[in-house]
Image (cartoon, rainbow, N blue to C red; front, side, top):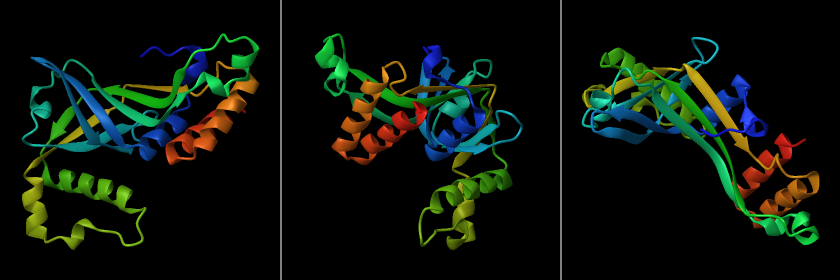
Length: 211
């Protein structure tokens, strides 16, 4: 992706944290008939260091696992908060008028070879890990063990495990770093005034990244 130096985020621990916090990936591969894209929750295993491995599963009926060309890397895109930025928040708008709208966003791209597996024990391990990750936010947590074992076994037959050992990890934090401090403060104030969770989250990103 186009990623000017002032927007680049290269700290692996920061990139890994965004993957954990926003684990629904756009998984893009190339097949014989062109690009294939699906939206898949993926869990990050930090091994092998330093970049780690992404794991998840696809429905057996989903042709992506079968049709993806093995010699072309898969791309998993993890999207954090995003927000439209109006020029009216910039003091520069009144001073010079030389401003334009933009979009702020936070994103991580992970690339690597897509591998598949059907071993039921590995599938169960991954399903457990994925479930435990997302159930952690609830006071009453559902567990794979809450369902009948024969039911889970039947469900596992309907999925294909996937994993992507990460060969390349790239982060773009486009959060107003290219604006002067007064304009950045205007963005933070404007986003906080909107008050919705996504706008407030982006205000935090702008504030933290530009300290």
